[in-house]
Length: 276
Image (cartoon, rainbow, N blue to C red):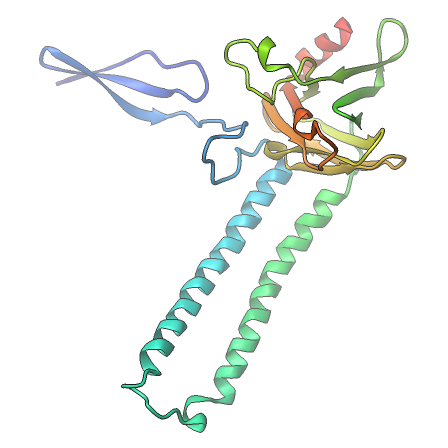
């Protein structure tokens, strides 16, 4: 049997295939897997989108750590329930003796144990919370303003050919105008272009009602209040297109406010700025 290397798929998300020749027959087998980048909502999805920022990686790690404790609690409490149901039945124990089945020790255990678990969860949770809250020495800033029902973006650090701030509106593309391969209710006419590996401050406000800018793959979720400025920050760790939506009910077309962030290299970002 001879083994040959097939063509490696260039598109993300495809499985690399190896050609295995056996006699006169050729069959394909999946040998190595490229990381499938899940940056969009998936049907029946039950887990996070692939993280594309350090803060999202921290959120996923915190979730997995807490899930570990939850599994232990699930099996511990389940075991106790089964033992109680088995032991305290009419046939096994027709008469329950208070002083033989109750005790100070067990009550101390089931009181102190949850407190210790909460402490173990609290320390990494507070650490991540404060790390995400601080915006220290950003390289650039973006102003995002929510309207009914679209987003406006402004680059206050850059000027266009008319010596004005680069700014544009981002509207949902109607289903009738979608091209093949684009995502329904998620694609917009103007994407927010951001460079990778750059500390970016995002200033968020609302023009009319309360909105909320959210992008799961980047770990972004910040409310936009009229007359008030909120801020968050992000460092995008890889190139890609990341989809989110307004996460605050803001009216009849609340579902028509997608957020599309396209991360490009710094060289491509500079070229894009020159075209504005």
